[in-house]
Amino acid sequence: MSDIVATNQTILVVGGGISGMTAALEAAEVGKQVIVIEKTPSVGGRVTRLYKYFPKLCFPTCGLEINQRRMAANKNITVLTMAEVTDLQGEAGNYTATVKVSPRYVNANCTACGACGDVVAAEFDDEFNYNMSKHKGAYLPHNMAMPKRYVLDPGIIGTDDAQKAKDACKYDAIDLDMQEETIQLKAGAVIWATGWRPYDANKIQPYGYDRIDNVITSVEFERLMDPFGPTGGKLVRPSDGKEAKNVAFIQCAGSRDINYLKHCSRICCMASLKQSTYVSEKYGDDADVSIYYIDIRAIDRFDNFYQKVQQDKNVTFIKSKVANIVENKANGNPVLNGVDTEGYHRYQNEHDLVVLAIGMEPSVDKDTFPIELKVNDEGFIEFDEVNGGVFAAGCSSDALDVNRAVQSATASALRAIQVVNKVAQAEGQ
Ligand SMILES: Cc1cc2nc3c(=O)[nH]c(=O)nc-3n(C[C@H](O)[C@H](O)[C@H](O)COP(=O)(O)OP(=O)(O)OC[C@H]3O[C@@H](n4cnc5c(N)ncnc54)[C@H](O)[C@@H]3O)c2cc1C
Image (cartoon, rainbow, N blue to C red; front, side):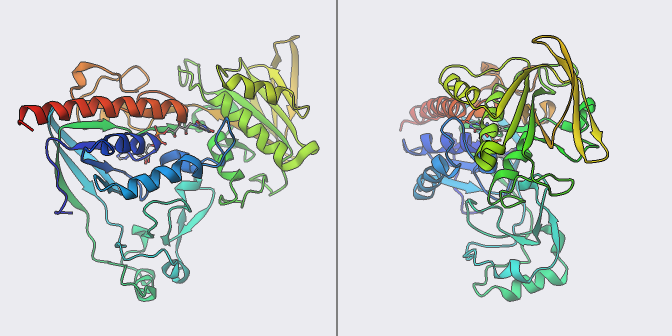
């Protein structure tokens, strides 16, 4: 790590999701030196955890793979995974970042052959699948992982499993002596692209996520439908593994509500409309989808997608804010109570599975940024001159879909380039 060259003309990108990747590429492809700091073992962010993208319904490899190739081919980009910025001091044109890098215990010799994973017995909750499955103590983060390199879970270090993994590796890729490192990097500008996290559904007490097995969240539903996900792409219920054909989606679950998230995340309606197509794709005419909504927010080009879903005879739209969910103990079905505001009928509707369309909140808590930044009430970073040479990209600036996140990242790259160009001019280059 000591060989990393960073100067006050370097652009530091914190977060390697689609926004961080985009910002890094935009800056690197005009010749700037960029260092990407990513917390997890691979870049790609939450997009890698989607089954398909709206509105085209293509797989996340579409778009991500080309960016991964551009990054791998660009010598101006250095990526540090399992790394976090713990401190950031300075001002535009002259920052020093302190970066903590956790040990992966696997070096660049790894070919991802999987021999280490085969011999390790211990298993751990797989956060990539929102803990709906386990991964081995030696694992590849996911099938689109970049770098395509295994990781040893710290939980096996010092156990027989760690030695077994090392002995099984014919490429000398496992280094059990790796230690946490702290390094300091200079930078002229910083792009903050740490993205979003799903709102904690446990907080929405009336919807019973914490006590009803067959109430899940929209992010879990994406993993459930993915052929590489916890059920191999089968749409089955968590409680009993029964096929879920009658699925309800609840919009604004914990959003636009003074008790929970005040803001609208803008993408949840589109995510549920998209997910309704997953059910139809799986079960054809046997699919029975209900979408409970306050109003559907699908503007501009997304309106066509909404209209297409409206024409699907297996999808019913119910204009209602669901009051609460209880469980039918006899069959595990969630039962939704509320009032249909088109006609004012009181309903008590039973479904196989309920998906809460939860909102997006910033992944970094308001008061925990390593440098003072102007944030709004929801914790998203604002564009403000008090932030100096730190610019937010993608979902650290707002709840955005991929298209808008990429636009925001491109704008941030341009701002960061302007800062380091001024440094270069001042230094007579
Ligand atoms: C249910 C659901 C479905 C969706 N489906 C679609 C869809 O079909 N189409 C679409 O356009 N959009 C969709 N979206 C939105 C999409 O996920 C976002 O637009 C996209 O993830 C934004 O990318 P990002 O890079 O800004 O953030 P993220 O994807 O969150 O990436 C942030 C990156 O920063 C890293 N990071 C976080 N904190 C730190 C730290 N402290 N230090 C270093 N690194 C850090 C993370 O590990 C991650 O790699 C969906 C959202 C939801 C909730």
